Image (cartoon, rainbow, N blue to C red):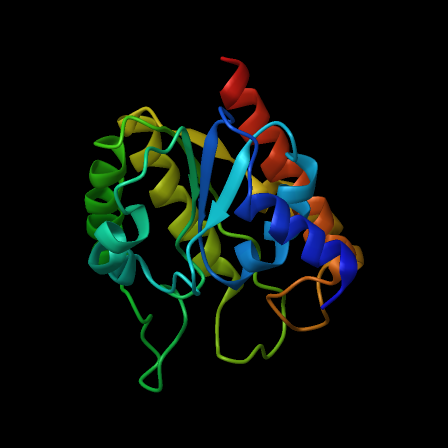
Length: 202
C-alpha cells in the first residue's frame, strides 16, 4: 500500500478525540475524492465514507440504516445521479426521473433525522461521446435540476460539483468517461473539503 495512503487511513482509524464526524455518501466519483478530502480535513474533521459504491437513489433508501449506523454525524455530504440516469438495454434510465425524485426525498428525510448538517453534491457531467455504460449529457442537467429543487425545499446546502467540473472537463476528466484523472479527483476533493469546512464554521 502507498505509504501516504496508509498513513491517511491509519489516522482515520485512530482519529483525534472531539473532531467533527463527516460521512461521505456517493458513487465511484466520491471514491475518487475521498482520500483528498481526508487529507485536506486532517486535524479538522474525522472523515468516513460508506464502504461501497452508493449506486442509485433506490439503493440509498434501502441501505440508509446500514450506512448511517448508530454513530453521531455532524456533516453528511451525499450524491445520487450517475447510476440513476444510466441507460438500460431498452434505452430507459435505470431509475426514471420521477422515481429518482421520490427516492431522493425519502433519503433526504432519513438523513435529516440524524440532525447532521447536510450537503448535496450535484452530479458531475457526462461527456459527449459513446460512454460505457450508456449515459446522456442532457440527463445530468434534468436530474440535477430536479435534485436542486428538492434540496432547496428541504433546506439542504448544495455543493455544485457539476458547475465546477463542466468548464474544465477537458483537463480533469478521462476521455469519453464519467470518471476523473487523479488531478481531477484532487480538484473535486478541494471543492468537497471547502464545502464541509464552511458548514463546520457556521
